[in-house]
Amino acid sequence: MSYSLRIFFRKHKVINNPKKMLDGTIYATNHPSSFLDPLAFGEFSRPSVFFMTRSDVFIKPLKPLLSSCQMLPIYRQLDGGEEALKKNKAVFDECARLLKRKRNLLLFAEGFTDDVFIRRLKKVRKGAIRIGFESLEENNWEKEIKICAVGLNYTEPSKMRSDVLISFSDSILLNDYKKDYLENKNRTITSLTRTIEKMMQEQITHNQRADLAPFHEQIMMITRKGMNNECFDNNLSLEERWIYSKQLAKWLNNNKRDQEILNQVKSESDEYFSLLKKNNIEENLIHWKHFEKSSKNKHLFKALLLLPFAIIGFIHCAIPYFLTRKIVKKIMKRPVFWSSVKIVLGMPLIAVFNAWVIPVFYHYIYPNWGLAILYFLSIGLTGFATYMFFYHLKMYKKKSEIQNKDTQQLIEKRNQLSKRLEDFLADFNY
Image 1 (cartoon, one colour):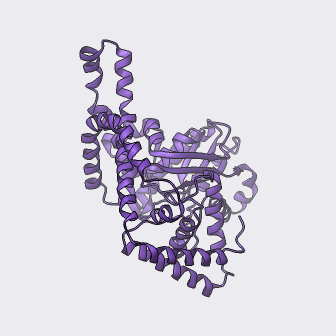
Image 2 (tube, rainbow, N blue to C red; image 1 turned 30 degrees about the vertical axis):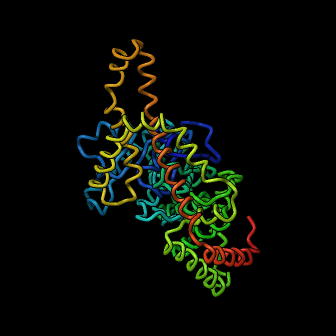
């Protein structure tokens, strides 16, 4: 998983990464990309956690594997009514035992993932706070239990070679709220849940109005700042792009803004991007043609350099890749699950499919087990070379096509929109 995730993501960054691996902390995080979220958290952040996971994943054949991966089932009332709540009692008791031993828990506080990726935080549920206080009661308030808000920020979780930034808030010590909790449990749980919700919003790009999320993305594309996966300034760090993205969303969320002007600019932006879609042209290609000086031939040159490695990667990875894609799309009805499940299934399937490589290398190429294993481990890199080979060929083709197209109308529209956005964002500081 570590190997595949570091190939999948182009860049990763962790803000305020906790210093301790084990600290008796409940981490409450957003849930923008289904199975990819626990993988990214587990790989790139320091804390070791037990994952609170939807109970319907715990089918009998998978239970030993999931348990060994430090996953605990959480039963939702909508799945099993009162019976589900009874089962949760045993799980919460286990949580109390883990927290007592300074182990950590990770909960996806929203409870579900959007079908279409939106940079926002959905309503946070009370489970994380409730587990914390019930664990304190179980342990007679003798152990310290903390809660920390976490933000998972992707440029585009469904695409390979995207970026991820994980941001941690400061922790809250739940023991400090003992008096309030004993006086009124429900009020204290509700109040702290809302506090954690606000802290989580600070760790991510939160488009309070879902209808403005596309406009927020369009602004990032035109300005080439922020967390868009294709349109960004390479001179900006991932952290700078994250700050721009979340501050822009916060600025757009301001209800005191002149709504008429906002709607006018939004309409002009929608018109430009609709025109791009109609002409089957991407904004990053328009920017390349009219504002960048790089040659399209660099993609052809890189593809030729990668070709020998790409052939090896294709031999080893093509069959398991297409098999994984077919299985995932057949089993998973929601596209939001596809990219993460392909990582989970794809890399092990490639490894199993190529297990024959080690003995064949030893007996027929060179009798050295170390070199045989090294060659086996290089398959991930040659598979990546195959992906990059086809990526550069595709970009060369796209740039060749757009060079021959008349894009004058589009560039005029873009220049008008860029000037309009410059005026619209005049008082936006980040």
